[in-house]
Image (cartoon, rainbow, N blue to C red; front, side):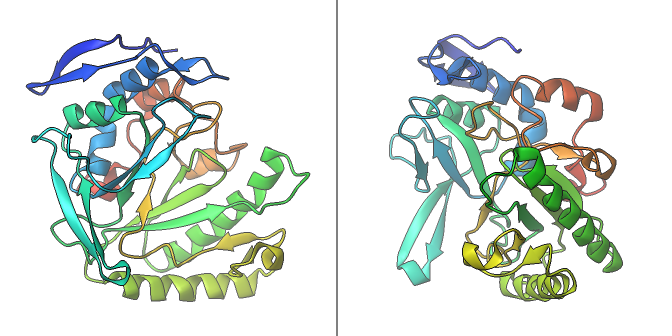
Length: 301
């Protein structure tokens, strides 16, 4: 287990960031403190930052730790330091504008982690062309069925992921895969930003419809849980402007402080569930394998 950081002032990329209440227990079952989470984010920052940079963020904050009151923050607070960039996004249907925070460097990352941010949620497009996504994310979640173990509910997710991979490879795409850190998987594909969200969503809907018709025993596009029952839900509606994804290496608010971790397709074949990687073992893994999702955000990686 990594050592936690202590309260006090630290300097990162020339900026001073004050850390507070670092001994506060954030994950009671795992014995993980706020200081542990901050230390994890500092150590993982070289890999995580490319997946956050220039993307509007939503913050999932747990100031008193997991299990206590939490909230999503979409608007930057007035007290945020002036060096922490923000970007305004208009939501015409909701008749509002949100001023999302941006994370450029380790100082911004750690400042927000100190505010109790457990999970960062990033847009699928960047601020220089917000209406054209550069990431296609396929979210594969297990069915909600009482009586199934975590491992049993994960098996249809893995099977679905491999079927989606076959379809994407046939279309000339090279999908990557990662655990969500909760119950499912994310498949990711890099896009050239020639298509709008609507165009990408239409193509994704066609793909999901084709697959669910071929394997109605495994997959469903039914929104209502009682209609899809034991089947994996394929949701194309999440591919929309303003939608976000928990990027690789972000912490999830689970009992074990799990991590959304990239894996190889070979590893996925024997992966038991989505919470295998945690704050306690994630750094050792990435030291060994590096960033398996780097090609999605770094040309030529």
